[in-house]
Length: 108
Image (cartoon, rainbow, N blue to C red; front, side, top):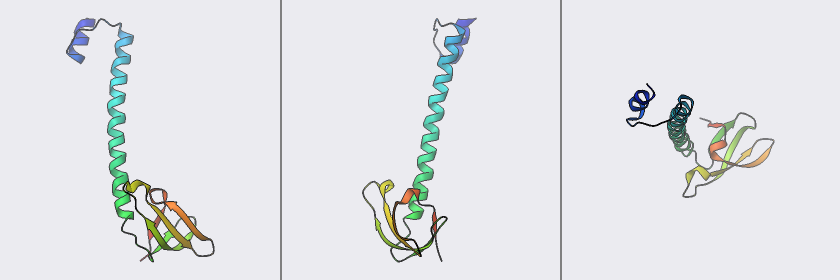
């Protein structure tokens, strides 16, 4: 029966105990899941960064913690995930942050 289960799942005949076979299957499925999850998270991050890159100097933004601010500069390197933004917030001063971690929206 073990050979039949192995052949059905992998197309080959392994001589593994059921517990070892279970671990092989679980680890294979886990790797596929993590790979897909990473791709999805990268796609979501890419969309968020592209949306945030629409912000330009002198735009007004609202941050959850710091409140209203004006964008002073935006530094966009080749790897746009390392883009930094410098914002002057009312009553707080100037903050320099990585754009991907900023939690603000453009004020209209």
